[in-house]
Image (cartoon, rainbow, N blue to C red):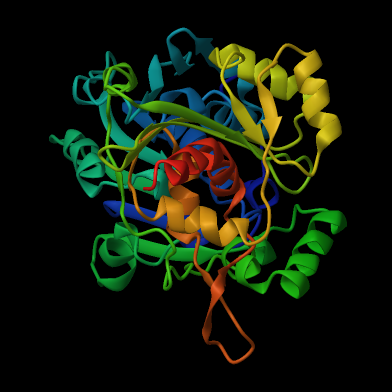
Length: 415
């Protein structure tokens, strides 16, 4: 195996990340908009560093373990090819890990949905020096981060250092990440903001998409384009919590009803389907699963529903696409029906949901994101109005559809 490759890091990595690349303090935190190359730069940096430090191993963490395969694992694999060193690395899917062949160093992947898999980590060669939290915004509980942080410990050989890297989109300024890493000044923290303007590898079509967003959706552009903090003032739903629970145990309660809704999307918006259990007696809703993905054809939506075993459930879908509903019926999702909506249905649906305590399973990261950012709109004078913003609402719209039958039933019962 050839261990040396002549690669210009300046050309491969590009500009805007020099301080990030060289920083060796305990915490390296990057909030950024989409297309800011924060994740790809981190992947390139990890591969480069591990080849420079033959005793270092890396732990990569996401909120949900299954999300690694199509994100961090793929990005790191891409990074080895970008650096022309992929022949020196072995990529395993079971268990999910990447191995540097000359030394046996490993990149390990874990999810916070299985805490024991993190606290029990040991490495065969060298030391566990570094951790990368991708999509760190999805980590709602700071304690979950602290548990992993504390696992990166112990004395290291001279020249080595321990470091935690966090990358994320800054959806909500009330997130613990802001207070901990951006509001407080600390000698062992590098906290930076990047955006698409520092990514020289974007195509003109990518730039035009951001320019369109800047003109037509300035609130989203501020977050996704410029990487600035989202503001959650005027939150529509406040009585919600993130807690792990056993779906099957909740389903045993007397009188509870399941609720499935579907909002259609494709290129710009995702197709979104939340799954929940409604306990009308105790005024509690348990959101236990979600589908949230762009670019799905009707047949692929049906496949997702079948994969999860929900094809026999009553699914209330967006009535604006009757053809799609009919195609899903023909695909075997036979109980799907169109939402009735009606005048003022959005406000009525919101008011109905506001009566309930909403418990969201930690795996439903997109639902959590929407609840965090779904706020009342404002008029031209900046005053709040009695109308929700038309964004961060794909799962929430589907959530409202799913509760239509229960809302009608409880109205008849006089609740």
